[in-house]
Image (cartoon, rainbow, N blue to C red; front, top):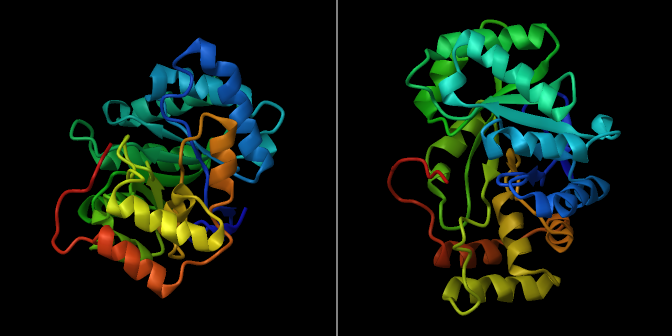
Length: 284
């Protein structure tokens, strides 16, 4: 698995990681989900992303089981929910996540969404104190606009925001208009979640599906692998697809290490056109 430096941290993480949304919600699937996450580690997908809100904490508990004995291999990220983003709430949420994950530190801790209830200055003060205490290494945000990013960064006095995690897939390219260029200019990594959309990945019978298949055929790749390659084509882009089955995680792991040509990119732009005017950030 290819790696890139996360922002300017000096730490390299895989271009493709592992998302965990909705994992751990069904006991009957737990064993397979744990085995799949471990297979991902074997294949180099060592960035695992989770959140306290996923499964009301059950997802973090499952991740904790999956990485038991392998914590040193993992770049582990979790998120504090906006309703908990007061100073004390952020500290408490982090400590509870650490307990569920069976670890004493997070590599990356993010604010899941902008909170209208708690001032961002409180949240960022807590984040910096968590760094100072050794409970987190780096600070990130999720679903933040440029204006929210700027305000969050101004609230920090010792640390800096290293990434913004946002929805990014072929049918949701809104970040390319302003947010992605801004993050590139300021050295902020962009971690795309839901790279296959929300149950609306292009059908093989659709025009977009046919184009993905045609491009993939040139490289011996699947349409999903073409999509992941496209979504990580720029130097500050990472992605965290969820894969709850072994065959899916293997497919994800083979999506990089080859390069789409300008002609491929033009064909994808034609069927999945980039945005031409500003709109709200997509969220799932």
